Length: 453
Image (cartoon, rainbow, N blue to C red; front, top):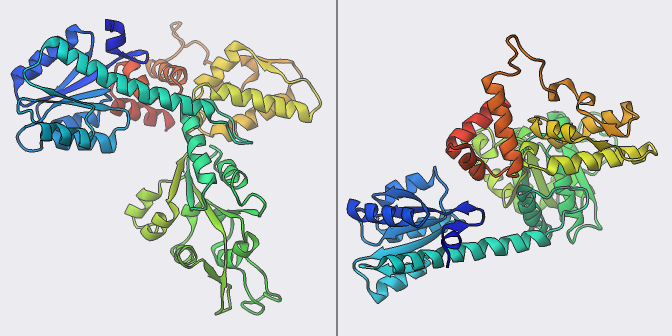
């Protein structure tokens, strides 16, 4: 095994966290592994290691078995339950067969007895990292087999994960909760879940919960009988009855009142509805897909959304990434929209210059995919040219004119532009972007939040 093969996982140098309560052992491991080309982090206890793992991304944890307080086994269990992309290797000066068996059962890839030679250490680390390489390769193979459902576009890692979850959700009738910022395509995901699943021949009924007055929402959802209220001259079925056998899409579910939330919870529990003005229950066979652009768990903590309803809805969570975190997907979407709107006008699809595409990638897209679609439609309708240049884009996407003194942009603007470029190049991978920028993930997260204000 060559040093390059041994020290790299994919295209980056492997980061290893060594954990031991003896400073001498930590220093020995740091010196030997650094000399072999690895990037090393150290911790003197399991709690310290867990705290560090919350801030840093590492490929391999090398931990001692016996340590004061929480043992190395506790750390192995934590990594296995919380970090899918990290492998663990255990070392011990009290090596026993039962101890090795227990470590392997907990999830350690390797178990190395002290004392060990440098070669034994490096070989065990090489085998552990090879396990990680195989896992990643298997995920890539699975991702390459994922085909985007009709109506959805994306090749980024973030969207491949969405498509994989969506594919599994479509084969089930369990309730799904789609979350994401406005304009990310939550209804398209809900439609894909419906039409890719066994209920595709039955109705898909979308309901914008925020668009219906609260006084009418109960009647619209559950229906009403004749004479139930002033103006109810006939009985009328609600959305639940209309969607019988199919899917009911409840968009902006966070905007419903506590009273409506209580009634929805009862429907999800009992699979039956009561029409307004009636005491008779009606059985319904409807799959629920809800969507929200807000953090429902945060609303639950503030007692603004029922916790029991949240648990009922959040059976299959699907989180849609914002467009700014989807890397080169912005190019795919822009060209797809350009072709779509050009076809509507009976003209040849226009193309974007490289600089125009660069401007699209640099923009923050607060309105997400919907904003991109609207901009491209405006370009196609208002511009007969076969090629779109930077000058054709909205002013907010173009660089500002030079400032006094010949300096074009502020330091904050330069930093923001660089962060967006790095994220676009790395297809929205925040961990890799943080490493490339030389900052930790927490700092990157704060900078991204500042950009969105």
